[in-house]
Image (cartoon, rainbow, N blue to C red; front, side, top):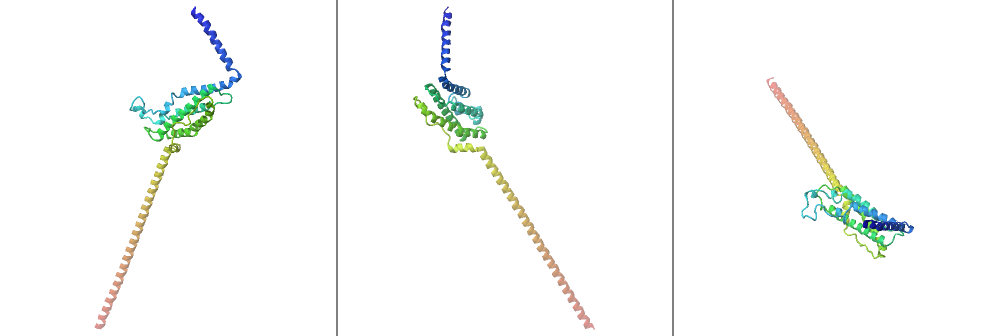
Length: 285
């Protein structure tokens, strides 16, 4: 009997409450509030599906878990592009940024409830900025180079951070702070951790591409040096051959001169003999 009485009391009450909220939110003046709550609900669900806590999947170093002082062997072997800065986290961060920026208040949506929700979204995006900056600092400074790092993926993260995440979050915080001040809500003026400009430039240029260019330049220089050495050797050989040919020609000329000189001496000797014979013949006569 008590259960029947309880049902008779609770069920009408629930139906009355549902009818009250349905009639309240279906009013035209409540349409802006419902539109904002739809966008906010989309952000909350996406946030819960992609990341947990304060973006620990990106911010924390998986090779050095807080539970143990020494990193595990399996985690230490993985590069940062397979753990913190993997492609799935990049795609999720891009979707989350888009959903968070869509939660900006429009005309007629300002009230205490929407201001509280927007304050949480803005603070959450600031946390995403901090997490990405910490992970990029680890990657670009080489603190986590346990394996082959995907430099193209690092470049995509740097582009996302510098061109989308940081400027859009700053713009949203600046635009939202004036509206939240009216409800006693304040946002931090800084984004927390950041990436140094020189490190960001290094990531945008691509460290692997620079190494490849340096290697190709060194290879081309070595090829040019070898070609120069070969050219020098060939010229040296040609000059040596020319010198040898000149020496041989000089030797041949000397031999010819010697032969000519010998022939001339032989002719003079024959004439001398002939003169002597003629002399003796004259005496006999």
